[in-house]
Image (cartoon, rainbow, N blue to C red; front, top):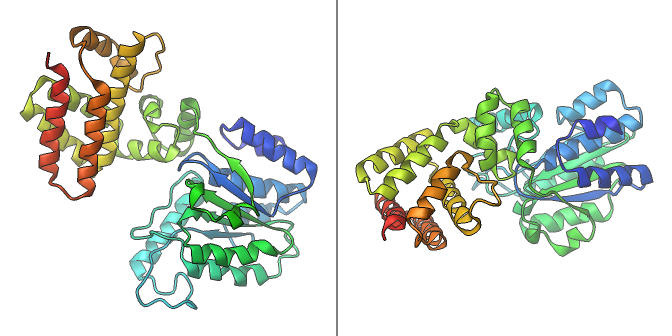
Length: 369
């Protein structure tokens, strides 16, 4: 059992539960792995199916093919772009153009190399009914020489009710040796009829140290950069990779933007914000989240006088203390609420310049006596 545990980071309770399942010899035919994006659900599914096959003496070649997500060992399903001219009988890939197919192939290759990589194909909003119907062909293939095969459905909550009902038929009478893994971040979108046929396992957020360990393993980032951004990942490797991709320096620019805004330096604040938009490819939502984290830290210091610690912006803890001494009436919860409202305006296509001026105004209100 050591190999199975050693290859995975974090989630000790999940490991113990899976270990008990294996030791019982009563392997469920379906699992529902639930937890936010980037907590390792896919990594656990792959290591679990690898371990089961190792215990049945599957060849090293077979284990390698599982890792490579190759059929008939693994059927990997995830959201794909839907096309207007698709028919129910089409292969899920049949009508994708060359650029879309290339994006899919590149994403799968990255997933093979890094099980924590999040596949996000442009315009891929749903797990297609075609993908679920295609399962029948996979399930009918003779896999008698493979002890256990896996059907892994990532973002399973993105299946329509029609797709879920189609999947239900396969779950009701699963072939021997097939294990379904439904990976979800929103279990409420899964039909009760499917939940009742799957073994539920919850994956809580990873610890900051777990996130850092995974980021160091699967990226070229320096230990200093990883330590700097790990708190902001909020237990999700997906978010951690995104921040690393943009560059750890965005944390410094967020601090500059906040400080300039609070001081009312509109020109400098705008300049810092423009830099942030350039660095993050206009990821306004992430920048707004980072600003909200700073406000949350400041409010935490105000309420606890620093007795709890554990700030996102640990390097700014003395700034929080000094600020709260000078501006005792600062209403951080109200500012966070107003910031969230401005973030919602972005989703309604309100001009970013208008939203920015309002954010600066809202942050500046903290320093008004």
